[in-house]
Image (cartoon, rainbow, N blue to C red; front, side, top):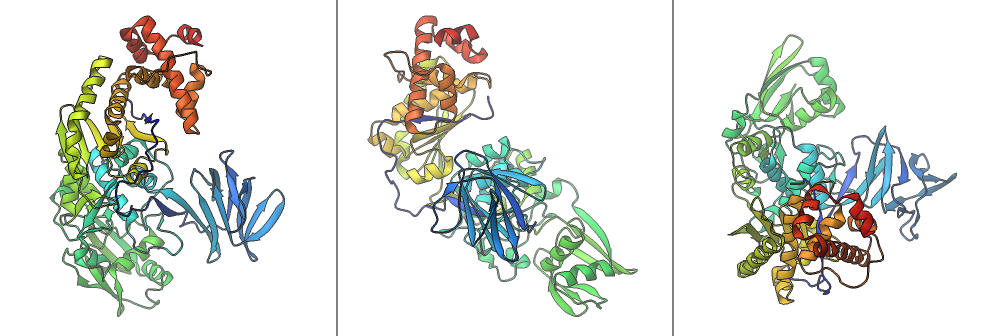
Length: 572
């Protein structure tokens, strides 16, 4: 099966704006601070697409972006482009751009705002939540992770992103490990984990719950109140025994640092003035972690102490707050266990649970035992209804009534194609149109989204009410069956056209105005609904001719091996 296939079905009926839930939707986007650790004073900006624009004040009109640079100067924030320099208060970019600073380049498709903040550039991208989650999972997951542990991480990362905690003044989250690490790129594995859990977050007592993760808990997680005093235990971030983490091997560590090194680190952060001589742990939490250390008579939160050492001397020195310290010569020796703050999901333990065959829901239950996995917008729990050949995932109570019609659509897809899926398919039905759009990031004219063996549908009761449920499900089941046979080399017009034809949607009439190759390009990147409709109709017309002349068996073989060039030339 291909790793990635993004396919949608078009509906002629206009119903996509129908609201099916009165609940306030969760945020669809999150403001992410870019390159927050670098404190850049200048960034080069170039258009990545012809649609890129720049806007130099709140009341200005957007203009076509011509390459330039944003720069902090004694006079303030400058925009320098085409030999002209303007002093501005903020700069807004949209339509796709390329940013370059400190030797690094990123290409972003989302709106970006640049402002002045404390003498440096504040660069903020407004990113769809699901894309942010995908990038966080790609950056934060490790080689020990597998499908289920990445899914658990995706739910935690999404819960963190949607939490309303004020972390930064100018944006919601940063791209460093202060929040969640983002390298502004994704991976196929992270994409799959994010899509499989789209629309899911942790809930506690009727509210979305902020969640955290760390690398290795050392055998027991920390309560939030141990690491961040004042954070209530009822927030669901409790100290939990973790037998899975210790099965991954020893997490013990040790480090030796001189008095001079520690003095420099603490003075730089303003935690303790030079001249101190003694260091000891004076308060511990329930998990055994240090909560307060005494530095020459000055009491310092252990987490602040650890972060100060990490920023100055390296993050591999004091790896967690679970440590003992003793004097040694002209310095101190630390012995500890675990890595990271220890709150929430332990990535090492989650990876081991997944390796032992446990699913992401069981992983999350281990680390957040008082929380519930539920829909991000409504808090309704997701239920799984097992049917022959597929599982229906839904958070709408009465959606079970639609299982017979979905089953009928799968049977029809198998009968018409002569194909059968190699596994159990997943159909996820969203409770509202906004929830569907936010989860799939599909354009506004589509009613369903299929990728690999997962199908996402608009609300079932809306589809059924407009007599479109069977045809929509049939189309999407055909997509899954066809894609299982296709290869990366199989042209999109043949794959899409075969679905159109088998679903009975292929157009009759005269030859299309576009060639198979043109249809291929427009199917891959349609800019409008009309363009997409025309490309689907053309693909269906061509494949309908192939089916009539050569039969279903031969066309399926071409699906697996690719059509011969002579046949494509003939169609053209």
